[in-house]
Length: 146
Image 1 (tube, rainbow, N blue to C red):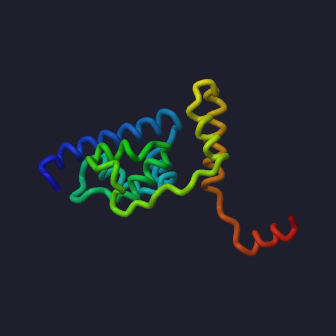
Image 2 (tube, one colour):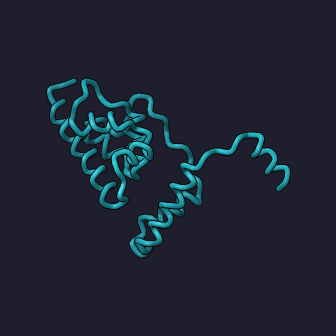
Image 3 (cartoon, rainbow, N blue to C red):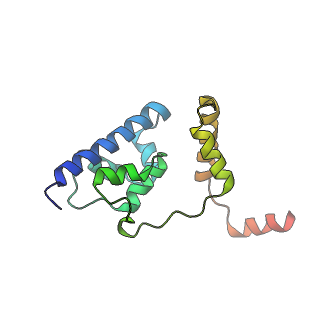
């Protein structure tokens, strides 16, 4: 790490702390719920908040944390001082976006859409994202019946 490591740690810790505060305030999520929704362990999140890491956080975990909270990973990358133009440490490129998902994302940022409707959109997306995947043999039976 460079001489700016303490500043980077503070900036990233501040980013993570704000993200957690927003998740608690806006979604009433506990630390355990944030961990479950993002796939990043509570221990890792706590180390990030304390700035207690010897080497940079893994880009994949940072992206998972941000995506689980609906944040743009570029903000986290900026806090870490990573070049946003370069792909950080083997992070995969974004897959093509489904038009229906794009439409939902536009509604979520549209100021004309009510907060209640945005809440329902988010809850539906969360339900779909975290529901168990059906076993392959069950899916085949549905395809044949349909």
